[in-house]
Amino acid sequence: MTMQPALQFTENDLIGHISSVDTSRAIINVYNSSLLTRICIGNLIAIKGRTEQEFLISIIERVTRSVSEDLSEEFDVNQDEIPIITSQSDVIRVVLIGTYQNVSGERKNVFKRGADSFPQIERECYIIESGNLQRFMGILGAGYPVEERLKLGIFVSGKDAEAIISGDKFFQRHAAILGSTGSGKSYTVALILERASKLKYSNIIVFDMHGEYAPLAKSEQNGFAVQMRIAGPGDLLNPSDDVLFLPYWLLNRDEMLSMMLDRSDQNAPNQASRFTQHVRSLKQKTLENEQKLKIAETFTVDSPIPYSMENLLELLKTDNTTKGQGKNGPVKGEWEDKLTRFISRMEAKLDDRRYGFMFSPPVIANNYNWLSTQIIKLLGSNNEKGIKIIDFSEVPSDVLPVVAGTLARLLYNVQFWMEPEKRTPVTLLCDEAHLYLPIRSDADAVQRQALGAFERIAKEGRKYGFSLLVISQRPSDVSKTILSQCNNFLSLRLTNDEDQNVIRKLIPDSLSGLTSILPLLDVGEALILGDAVLLPSRIKLDIPSLVPNSATRDFWREWATRAAVDNAIVNAVESLRSQTRSSSV
Image (cartoon, rainbow, N blue to C red):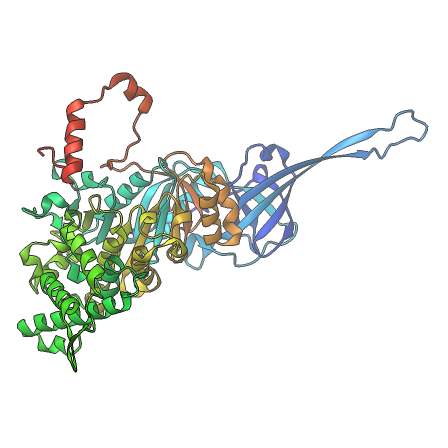
């Protein structure tokens, strides 16, 4: 059976002719004013191409009607009144998006990004609606192989057509999901994770800042993910299997010093020097004890090798109290009293149970082979559950950037050093990215360490099968370096001007007009832009089967029907004191 062209126009679809063209836009003089009342910003227009089989597809970004008054041509100088006639001029400005061909070689109904040619003056322009719109939207995702398709929902402009994008291009070149609070970001993330979970060996690691994606891992609800959490104070004595520790020896030199060192201290250079020398010597001893002599020849102070924090403190205290030997007896030592404040800050961190996930790991975590076991949990297939959700909700906010950055850097470095033919692609999903990936000029010493790790991934990760999916409600507060490396944007409603401007600056100038609809999007609607989709489109997202714990509370209704629970308040106070969410405290 011969395939019919997706676009079949009649005279009733003709809206006007081209009157002006530049490199990315065209102006259409409208002759069919009745059609003008049916169109709006974002509608599609087909412009006649060089052949009968070709149309240039464009998106409406401005509609203008102007009214003018002129003298009538039948004006008689002897008349008492001057006859005035009113005329109107209707103009549409469109952005050129791509080229549609009825036939392209052996293929039928082909659409591709970019215009093969520019519109010619007086070329006919047709509005794409009704059956033409349904058929055209339907072919957008049909060009992708079945195994590459990622279905997100339906097109708002063609509600019977599925919104399908390229899953490969969406993940491999970094992406961002942006939207104001309450716009549907968490549901969108849950939807994408649900789609990815259908693949046998998907590998997505979710940095969950508030623990809202826990329902996706509940087996009683047919959860498809594995949940882990960074250890809290209540996990230090008897940690369960789902608890993750990030021992201090995983931090590189700069990350550790960003937490411990006061750069304003006049002895800071001495403190950093002694710390570096002792850590390197302690790691050297570990390698010698483990008979890892080959590694001992090439390792650096930043290599993730276990060492004893107690031994490090002992060495620093010895430096801080050791006298020097002069000609006439003991003199002030080279390091004497220069490390006092540094040692005090270290001991304060060690005594703070909030940092137990780092400074009080279980004994087994200091074994040489422990790291490989943990990385397999995170990068392995976990019995074909490739979605791993890591709950960061109990991590102190002042070290959250270092913890997130250390884990990201560690995973990326393992991927970097893996044999290329044995790598499985990995995506880090960075929830609430503005909390730990701020604009560099606004970042403190701790945050800059995290930025360095994530910016390296953003710049180099694609080559090693390692990508980022950045989630934020305040894109204006997120590192511009990281966002500029994202090639795909799924933008939900954004009401703040600064946030909208971020999107405008990150997309081509020819598409900047599309961002005007961002504050008008409904909950669960998104504007998708980037190379994962053939046509920048407004879509209505599907609702995931398992929803996150992020639903907006019904304040007014609950105030009318639901009383506060005194026992819950008492338990919350005790949880605050114990720094654990256990209800049995």
